View (spheres, one colour):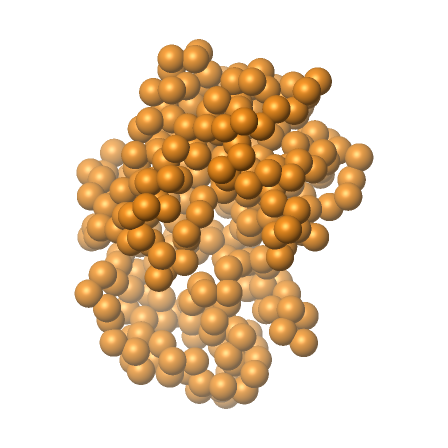
Length: 310
């Protein structure tokens, strides 16, 4: 099993939900982090003051000219991505800009002396698909966001190949946990139920896969250490259920007597009805396994939302 030593990693998007857990996991494993984010971000406080963490104030447009004198990193994890809300995912101009920012991140990785570059791909690169995804499933993105992610993965791979930098492109399925974006379905459901309101939901017949954020962060670290150059990897729990089963389990963890508005919202024309993936490849190449049962992860998530909404 191929293994690279990671003593210091640069990460963009350090205030994101995945970034927050990734930084925490690096600290837990005594790995230095160069956290690149906007100090003006509403979530800036998520990046801890810690001897292992160097904070760098930089927005995506500033990556191209960013210099960090005297700093050497083994790897770059590029998580930052603009215009990710559902209402912005077909806005062409910012999605095209995201591709350039990803290429700028590769240039920064080279300046920092990184031997590895890893982005953060998405299931959106596949578009509509029936059945579990595998890495080689034909990509057919249906949104500008998915198209841009696909292009960024391909172009950063080419750029890394030209520079002699190892390239890894994980495609992440649906994550959940503390720090999740407020527009995600589980966050919305929890918030509404805790407020005593009936959440307005679809019928929930979609087949879904939710992977806990801490598990996701650990998967990313495992890929930085043991992932193979030029490869794509799916990150998920490897377990699918109907979305309504997840939603009812969340409701039961809060109060089984509460009402769910299942079926109150019609399925949209772009609704993905099957979102699950085979994670055999990442298991084989890295030894990583998702460790958090949904019932455990959702309890932690509920407590976090409870504190956030007080």
